[in-house]
Image (cartoon, rainbow, N blue to C red; front, side):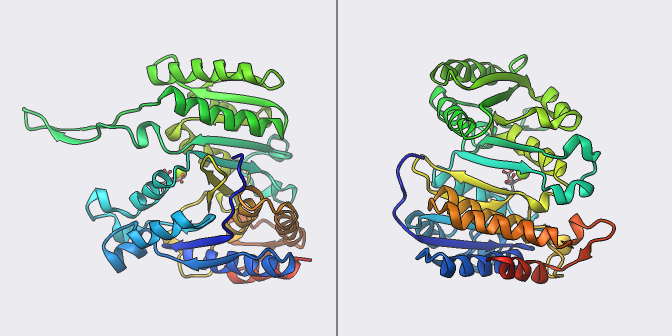
Length: 363
Ligand code: IPM
Ligand code: MG
């Protein structure tokens, strides 16, 4: 994340389900800030996931990957849906997402969980437990059990089938994600919690050892450790104790959904997946929500906030990023809510109205 990425071209992947609807709103926001702040950004659309399978037979077509490799950043809606659940495992929509993360080397997944004060009532937890919540999950994204070999389903001699995956991390992979967490903690409250299952799994015993070693380079940051089962419990018991959480691919997947719900709705949370140079793929933490697709019900704010993260982390346009975040806060202040974050006394809005309100709120 040291070098500045020079390319100001973006590849947009709307994807499946609610992806195209929320992306249309994010694109309108991008368009407006691009003009207002003279960012000089350009973009094109490509296919990923089920949409790509329908058009080309593959979840990650070569054309999409080539465009993404050339671009400075990628903006993604969501992939997957029941329509593609029956096709062969290796070419399902989700594989397209995993393949692009891996091919672009996006090992550092940043998932901030911030509770907007306006939404304290929308959380299923008591307001005093979650109000003021601001934590960051740093999830390792290109290793661990998601990618480890061998993997598969085999038939045993007895005729019974057996499924298997491999959880594997190299020292270098652990060290580089630890550094990302420590560097980010320096911009926050200088506390890192590493989450593992070192009491059972050797791979995470090594994880703990390497993270502890890397911490020596960050004497100003406090490191602590927690087993993942306890971390899952603490997240709902007293989530405000956390600053930066760093963990492997699978634990990060699970804990980030849990953290998202603390904020009232997973529909609010953006994410960034970064390589070593600051190039990134930005996407909402939520999925493609096929049950509400095409109904103008989806919350576009997570995707809009992903645009803000893109401007901040890849293009170093902090002012423009901040203006988007301010516009979102303004719209929430005005009482506008999509169904997922609605509560008594607020104004229900659809995807389009919500998106347009953010565009209008951009100073
Ligand atoms: C996420 C999603 C993906 C993951 C799926 C869609 C493959 O749940 O981004 O958290 O497991 O990484
Ligand atoms: Mg997930």
